[in-house]
Length: 200
Image (cartoon, rainbow, N blue to C red; front, top):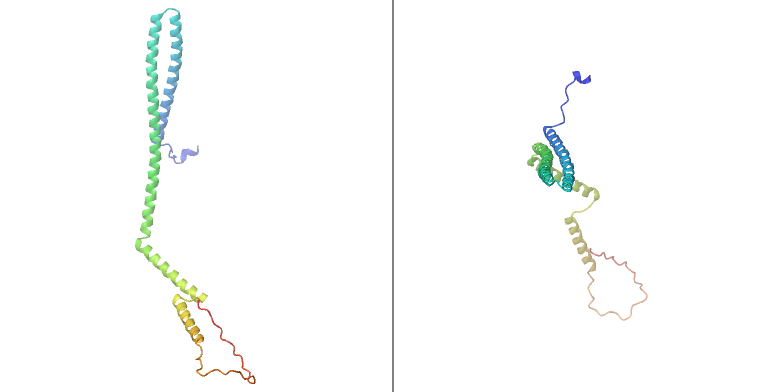
């Protein structure tokens, strides 16, 4: 009673489903007919043997002709069943293809809508902004970490080499001959030697 005042539900059974059902029903009827023919052929063959034993050759011959005709019907029935099964498979495969095409159509419409929202210019602008933001963040990170640029590091290495060269300069060698004996009375103060820093 609930459906009396409600809307009719739309059937989920399509025309293709009905066609497949009818084809399968027809196939099943042909298979039943085929079984009846097969059973009849076996009976008639046994009957023809019996007639030959009884000496009724003409009746046996007539019965074998009938049997031959039924065998031909059996072959035709087998061909019809094969055609029906092929038709069912074709319809079912076409239904699958239709669903795939419908899915592709929906996907294509969705992609087109997405492309309308984001044009190539918009994407290029966003990528440019992103690259600018990444570069800005890198600069902030360098300032916070105290890291130096490559140019700064090159300048520091050059300065280090200059200082090292200055420290390695030796005093001039005296031109006068050295005294043979060093006086013991005046102790020589040891100066600390400057540390050498290896250039990296």
